[in-house]
Length: 109
Length: 112
Picture 1 (cartoon, rainbow over the protein chains, first blue to last red):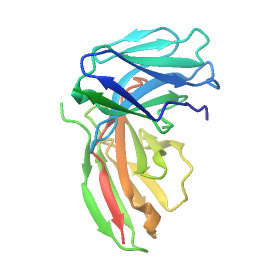
Picture 2: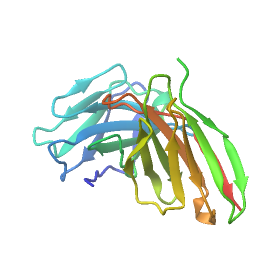
Picture 3: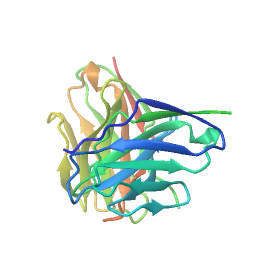
Picture 4: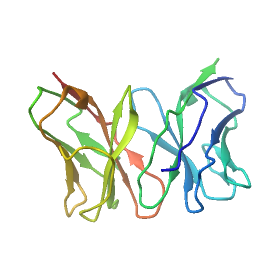
């Protein structure tokens, strides 16, 4: 399975943008890039996904490199409620998600 | 719309016993996936069911099994429990091809 590499942790100040990087150099042409986050004591929550083009939704933006070997999740204004573990995942056929270690985002007031 | 529900939320068993966990997906969702989360291994995919058929399977021993019913509800069973099976078991449901999976709150299993 194609794997992703993320920093173990990142810090951000409240109300500032956050850029969470992800490397996936072995991505195949049909793999979708998914981002989920997990708040303490909760199940993972879908954030965003994309294939080739940049994507925006109400929660975040996803910027995908032209060669698709890396991507960046952008939270435009971090809030304390955004403190969570963020997972960058490659999804192939079906709905099987292969989670890595994720990035623990800490948001300072 | 009700979210994914899992029962029970907490469970304590002893080694050698078996356990059955239940998951009710969001209404209309036909795909149900199961994951195991432990501090050491993180989140690992167990299996996925779609329209009562297992579609994908992760790298877990045969003691872990599952099934899906015609109403899309799913159960997973673990036989001959081991201490290492202590984990949070998460269920996720999705529409076919939507890409977005909705996770339940999980069942916390403790094996003594």
